[in-house]
Image 1: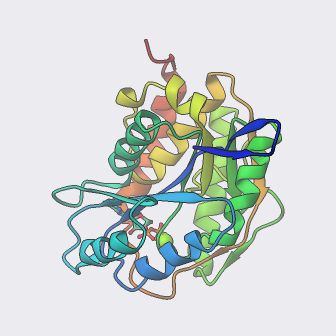
Image 2 (image 1 turned 180 degrees about the horizontal axis):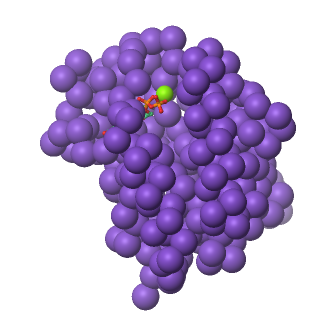
Length: 255
Ligand SMILES: Nc1nc2c(ncn2[C@@H]2O[C@H](COP(=O)(O)OP(=O)(O)O)[C@@H](O)[C@H]2O)c(=O)[nH]1
Ligand SMILES: [Mg+2]
């Protein structure tokens, strides 16, 4: 994206970073319009890519209506059914790289991730991180309204992952992130195997193993107040065994 302006003597061309926030959705009709408007209210020309998995509640129709209001900035890929968070993000990453974005974010639709924290993640990357993570556990525990059992499970899952994988990341399952383009160009996205929380762990570990710089930025995570969670308990099992397998694997960049 280029802005040009002239004064009498010189022509200035300013390159502005291209930034896109990928939001995966499944039945988010209560949240989607508000979250889109909240992102577009931020300073800094963020774009949005919604990965919509055929939500029966009509989420896609809401996005289409908003696309007439934000034709340049609001994008959507519709898939045929609930195909999972991992493949939703992989689809989004490939699209973002093909479309020339420099900073590529992951964010949930349900306001657990505060859109006002987006600029902090961006800034961390501008300050030298290759991947910035919005972290619940790098500064005590900052989770609001989750049942205590879920907080404990999530926190100790992160301790387990950090210990097994030897990776200095406190919130290993976090899904609020900013990737610089070079990370997503380097990772072999077709080799990512895990879904759900496992997907988040695998992406961080691959980024770490390929030598990229990771920075955690403290955020406050708030449980959703609208709509329902789509995560199932099977996702935990996958993450538990998947971490062991991940440890054995050789992580290679894309050929
Ligand atoms: N496209 C797509 N989005 C999904 C799928 N599962 C969950 N999501 C979205 O991923 C985000 C996180 O899911 P959520 O149910 O809030 O998980 P939780 O916060 O871990 O309970 C939300 O924006 C969901 O709408 C899926 O299978 N496909
Ligand atoms: Mg959620």
